[in-house]
Amino acid sequence: MRWRRGQHGIERQTDLTLTRINGGSSNKPGTHKAEPTVSIVIPAKNEALNLPHVFAALDTELYEVILVDGDSVDDTVEVARELCPDLIVVGQTRKGKGNALACGFAVAKGDFIVMLDADGSTDPAEIPRFVEALKQGADFAKGSRFMPGAGSSDISRLRQVGNFFLNKIVNLIYGTRYTDLCYGYNAFRRECLSVMDLEVGDESTDLGAMRWGDGFEVETLINVRIAKAGLVVAEVPSFEHSRHFGSSNLNAFSDGIRVLRTIHAERKGARQATPARDISSSWSTMSTLAEESP
Image 1 (tube, rainbow, N blue to C red):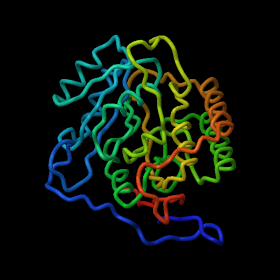
Image 2 (tube, rainbow, N blue to C red; image 1 turned 60 degrees about the vertical axis):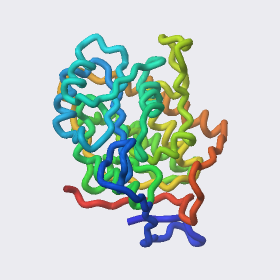
Image 3 (cartoon, rainbow, N blue to C red; image 1 turned 135 degrees about the horizontal axis):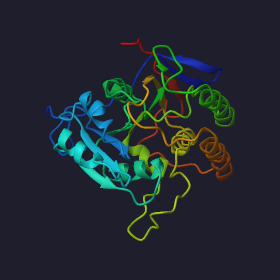
């Protein structure tokens, strides 16, 4: 089900605009195609033990797979290359998950780009439902753990409460209908990259430095900028699994403060990005994709 803002508030919208792409059968970038090509960007730091679980559910023949290595000291890169011979590996220009995503996005060639975690918390088997949301006309497919058919075995009570209130703040300020602000399982059309405007940096960048958007606040930064640009968003039900090995680098308090500062900074900046593709009658609507649990 999709929704749009109309003259009399939120209205149901049943007609979907599909993107027609002509060509052959392969889904990898650089080939003759009948379907949109898809790139998977996986930020990873010391995830050698978790990667086999991720790649076991990932169809590496179907997608372009990009691993962004955060200067791992274990066998992350070697394991990933063994699991996926066609893997593209890039390094980071600074620290943090946000910078890792920016570096991965910069080399992705797909029509659609999917953000996937390396710890096994995000299920690659759900990728088709994100891709389908984009094929149905959405610009940004937003994963949510808090809608029918979704859930989490990983989120703590503290993080859930923090996410709830931060979510409310963003919805109030930007007029959005997000149900899960701080979840990082998302997919989008590559035209959204100019809207996100994440800074990659270069060889002259201080590798020890972290700039705004380089940390875990990147998901909020992306969501807010997508909303400010008035792009079509489809929420997709997703189940978040617990990581198999190791511990998360996320800190509920310090990262929560960075998210709150991000919301404030983006509102103060009031920067409106210009969409890269033509504006349609439903461009500035917020949509929800209701889907049965598989």
